[in-house]
Amino acid sequence: MGAGALTAGVIAYAGPFGEAAGQATGRPAPVVTPQVLLGELTAAAAGSPVKAGTGTGPAPAGAAAKDPGGTETAKQENKDKKPAAGKTDRKSREKAAIKASGPSEYTDERAVAYFTTRWQDEATERITDIRTVGRYLRIYTDLPESADNSKTALKLCERGLEYLAELGETNPVVFVQAKYGGNGNPVLANVLGPEDDDCRVTHPKPR
Image (cartoon, rainbow, N blue to C red):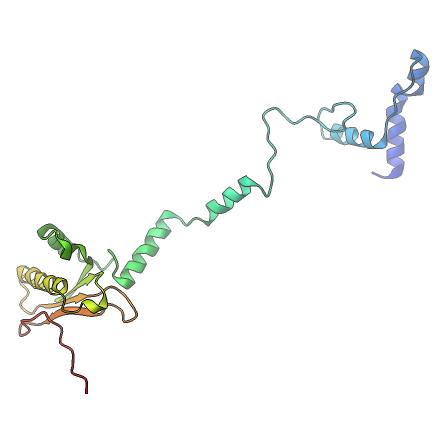
């Protein structure tokens, strides 16, 4: 609003309550400042009721002002950052597939059920996944790489042979493997066919 419009507004506003009213009633005319008038005219143009002398309209009942950068915005941003449940589950399974640290699309459910229902002991609790590819049975564990030929690794290998025998496999191959690390999932115990009757891993002698 320019200076000319503001001046015109003052005169128009003062007309009914200015000098003429003062002369008729004998009371001095009220003083109307441009700031008060500008606020009231703005509020009136917006269709809001105006409290005289304040230049602002009262807030609607029950309404609360929202700070664009306040708590509500922060909550929404945090909500937007949270991944969907399906996406989280998919990533977990992809990670498990790579590291064999849990069930994945490659898990042999039948073998898992065989081990978990037949043996409930500490050796079974070390199993993280069981996978079958052809006649190869791979038993993944959370055992460290240093647990090669350990009692637990050998026990799981022998149980793997028993499982394959029940399936009628005549050329069994079993690998018991350590948890994922810099060398992948190192073999802790194995049987490489019917001629291999020992689950112990052999290491070539250094030259």
